[in-house]
Amino acid sequence: MNRKQIPLSKEDLEKIAREYPTPFHLYDEKAIRENARAFYRAFSWAAGFKNYFAVKACPNPTILQILKEEGMGVDCSSQTELVLSEKVGFRSGGIMFTSNDTPDEEFVTAVRQGAVINLDDIRHIDALERSAGIPELLSFRYNPGDSRSGNVLIGLPQEAKYGVTRDQIVEAFRIAKNKGAKRFALHTMVASNELDENYFVETARMLFELAVKIKNEVGVNIETVNMGGGLGIPYRPKERAINTDALADKIHSLYEKIIIPASLAPVKVVFECGRLITGPYGYLISRVLHVTSKYKEYVGLDASMANLMRPGIYGAYHHITVSGKENEPHDCLYDVTGSLCENADKFAIDRNLPQVESGDLVVIHDTGAHGYSMGYNYNGKLRSAELLLRENGDVQLIRRAETIDDYFATMRFPGAPVGV
Ligand SMILES: *Cc1c(COP(=O)(O)O)cnc(C)c1O
Image (cartoon, rainbow, N blue to C red; front, top):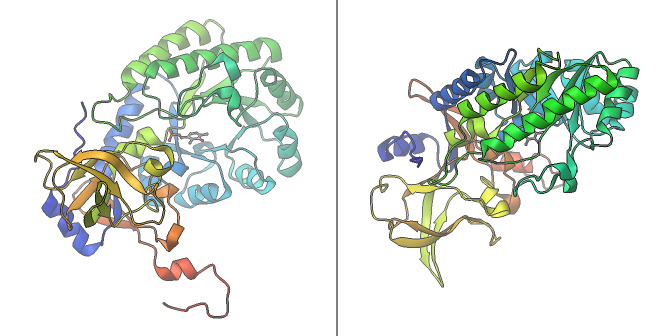
């Protein structure tokens, strides 16, 4: 059981809300740092261990800076993410570029930065050579197809658009070698929000065995095995977090069993986790505007899908607490909604909560990854601020809320308002 508690009282939240109007996302720096350290401690046996934080999970420079201080790199998949990472100060070995359907100019930027290029397709070798040249170090994303079952969230590997197939992967390394690459890495990602650590143990086995096969058939040593992201978090109070110590131990055993006898060591083990790193340590704070009684009972918030898409697009569960009413009986059944003209704009359906009144502050949990970053501007809704709860208890604005001027900034028409 995880307790789903924000480390702030109702009084604390009201005080913050007086300075920064709701809705806003709030991240807990102390918890993010402690979690990052625990992850690294679990893999302390693995020389050169690194997590390349998936920027898309929480593309805020202050958060990226914190993760950089904890020894992480970044995993980018677009020009903007590469530029953002460079601005935060990530350099060559700290940047992984795992893109797909990649425009030439993104290869150019990634190569200029010295990022590790993780190619999604065997034909992309040519595109990379033509646009930016073959770098010394080259990685491929492997898609095992029907030899792995995938998981419910990401679907079957053979239905996924990503990666080099089983038939192509050895040939891909051969081509890269012939074109002058000198150092090689291997990547896969076949699950999303998976809570069973054994899934990733099997992924490690698959990649380690493939590294041996590539050594035998192409004569190159894979120097880095990249397990991707996809490690899940317990969104529901009843779910259990991944035991990263057990995961690391099991991968260590496989390393001793497969990599060492094949004389491949040292092979670096790396991940691209986003959700696991910041997901549980972010909260969307919103105020109840209206409680209404129709064919069902509704709690209407000042946040909407513009701030958090996951429930609307995936039916994803996010735990919700009502600040100051955590210990009251949860005997009312509500749909918790935003204000979009879109019936999918619900944070929860048929959720038991305490009796809610307009003006209450609601905490939506586990929004630290794939939360703010997925937001959009439908109905002209503006994206919220992001705040950081610092280790000393101060609250820092790390992204201001959008204004209506931001919304109009890209429009070109005669009556375009100036300084609305
Ligand atoms: C989205 C993504 C990740 C991060 O996924 P999480 O679920 O946040 O761990 C890592 N690598 C790649 C290539 C991705 O597309």
